[in-house]
Amino acid sequence: MSTIASVPLKQVPAALALCSALFATGAMASQPQIYGLHEQVSLHELALELPAKLDTGAETASLSAKNIEMFKRDGGEWVRFQLGLENAKQAQIIEKPLARMSYIKRRADDRKPGDKQLYSARPVIEMDICVGDELKNIEVNLTDRSAFEFPLLIGSSALKEFNAAVSPGVRYSAGQPSCTQTS
Image 1 (cartoon, rainbow, N blue to C red):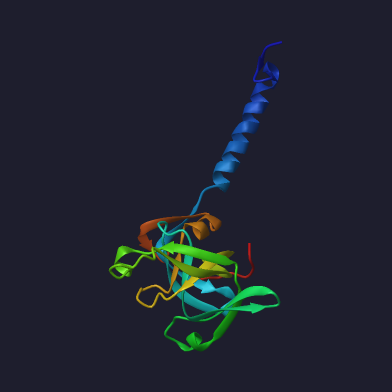
Image 2: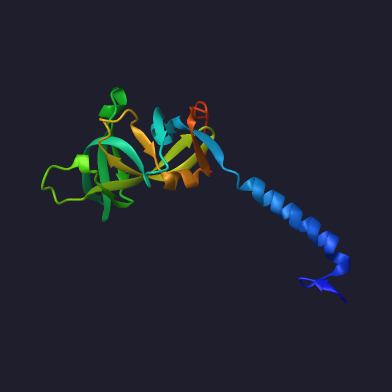
């Protein structure tokens, strides 16, 4: 009996049809969602919407925060901070468990002459972030982003979670955040 890749010749059409169906389904499932360079997002647990920049060149997401303090609670590391925003929500004190520390390479223009510290340590927390109708729990590092136009930067790790591709010529393509539960 003749075979192709251990499939009897009489079963080849059925095997080809199955392979085609699996390939088509897999290809469709892996297509990324196209987002714009800037999107309106929701910090779901804080019931707060804010603009974000989607940046494939950054690895982690960064949220503008101030008065960042590390402390211990129930034997674990926690972070206390306020949002670095110019509205009523900025006064709210937020406490979250520390997920890890992130070490971000500092830009040359962010260092003084003779400064040997090439990396800055930033606390990382987990937050539910909604973009369009997708809600994901992602890691976010906390830093002062008050010098930047966007208080939230979403980096490549979070973009992978959202199965996202960024089109730099597009802005706010996902519309208003409309999430109900984490997917």
